[in-house]
Length: 422
Ligand code: AMP
Ligand code: MG
Image (cartoon, rainbow, N blue to C red):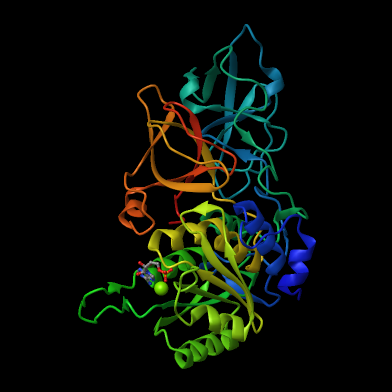
């Protein structure tokens, strides 16, 4: 386990007072390592889990050449470009069992979708392409198909003995279905990353407390809970911790004894008169950063015991943005997942945006399609870092990169879609 100083020494131009967003990502990739422990889970419990090892397919899918259509199977070498082909129907191949007969020249077998291709036959003419040609005879018109059409090849989905999925795959519905398709009732996955979170600040009210002047309800625990849950972490909610040394110390020690990562919000900005930073410093190896970004400039990062600490800013939008930009990729690494950036697209800006070079800005945006089908984006209006409704209205973050300046109407910008993440 490297100390923060050792990591810092490895990085070019590390300045905790003026860190770029890319610099943060790079630092965190050195700070975080994947959990080692694995467990076996049944497929219904595998959704969102991370594969611990490559899965080698024990069989081919599909297991046989089979028909992709309801129709008639025949030997496609008899097709002629300029002449119809008349075939005698000599049997029926149903899905689920092989047809045992043999079909010769100018013969065919009526076949159902998924049925095994009878020996020697490689082409299926769909029922609706054929014309009746008397008792037990069908006519295949010229030019409607090529040899090999409408046949699914053995192993075209997965080949026996080859990897079906690789270690680090975060299992989504399709991947879980794929595991089922090769007959695996269970799968070996990384244990879940355990993450504790709490909010700090004397002005923060827990739900159920009556409103009071100068106080705000704690929204950060709920957004952080949601983001962590969507990521597939095991979460431990530690409530709101008063700005009091004994309480903060107890919370950090309790969390560090139980979890892989601790996420706090609030109390890390420069002007803070509270005890949060002092306690992080006392208990762990922690750096306090000023990141060249908006929203979300202050952030504390380090280790308390063997837990990684992410001390996020207090402002509700800053919490979500720093989570998406930095904590999410770091936690994915901790979970053993392959790098999986949130998809970024390009969209034409519907409005001018003011942007100073020298910091990364994340504006809340709404992507839509213009009448002529190109992606366009507008911002949600008030971009204040406390305006949580902007995150609700948005379906993306507009990412204005470090070196980028003002954006003109119609200019292309990068957008990071929220789909399934926020
Ligand atoms: P801080 O980073 O502690 O200076 O907080 C910055 C702003 O975020 C202040 O206006 C806080 O009231 C607000 N804030 C801090 N923590 C939370 C929270 N858990 N829920 C909602 N707002 C918060
Ligand atoms: Mg505070």
